[in-house]
Length: 249
Ligand SMILES: NC(=O)c1ccc[n+]([C@@H]2O[C@H](COP(=O)([O-])OP(=O)(O)OC[C@H]3O[C@@H](n4cnc5c(N)ncnc54)[C@H](O)[C@@H]3O)[C@@H](O)[C@H]2O)c1
Image (cartoon, rainbow, N blue to C red; front, side, top):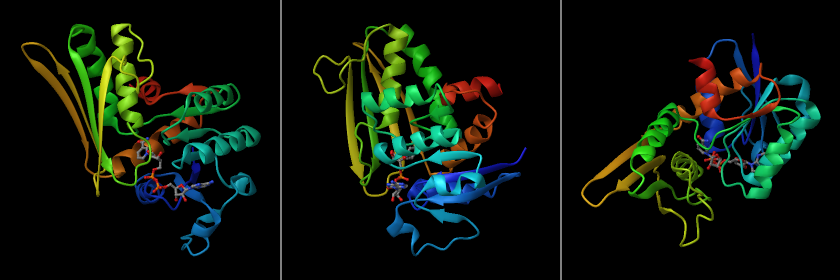
């Protein structure tokens, strides 16, 4: 099966990485690049149709991959509902209301939401769940470092890791900014750091830590494209990267 993809956020860091990585996939083409008007005006096209309105190019793609910001991303999801197209979402930083909007839209179209598209982090989530079940009395701290232009903090990946740990221990994560939050977060923003996460389980007599270091963005791009190909044939619903891994194993 051939897959034509529209990238929402085409001119961004992840948009560029996905375009670059797409050349490694057979039967796949980036056909549409969507971004704000001022960015697409002077952009070279390379055969990609550029637009600031996804719906204007709806016959040219099968799946949307979104790496933008929460508000434009929700707008893209609503457009996908109207166009009846699946959408893979890599954007992070949603509030609860926006997450509810995504859940609601997934009753109509297939949506895959993954705050981290790297296979390494997603496999680490299963390991974290296992460690958390056994180390219930340990204090947990999640440290993350990203580039200085990253807007949301803590990262979507750090929050996902915390949620997985709380689920494994059958406790509520609650408000991550509250002093009562069972998990401590530390976020650093440095010049060019792509993304490092370290989870530390601190006990009285020992500590266990798990670290993931992203060396470049192609690991996220690859995950986004692979899940988009898979999502194209799924029924409406809200999927995670773990659902994709399970289906493929
Ligand atoms: N899930 C993952 O694995 C993963 C990996 C890296 C980044 N991210 C997340 O992806 C998002 C994007 O990251 P980035 O580093 O590529 O950011 P970026 O700022 O480099 O790119 C975002 C792009 O979205 C565009 N945009 C803004 N409004 C738009 C609109 N209305 N329509 C279309 N495009 C619009 C911007 O012009 C920009 O080109 C962030 O939320 C980041 O946290 C997720």
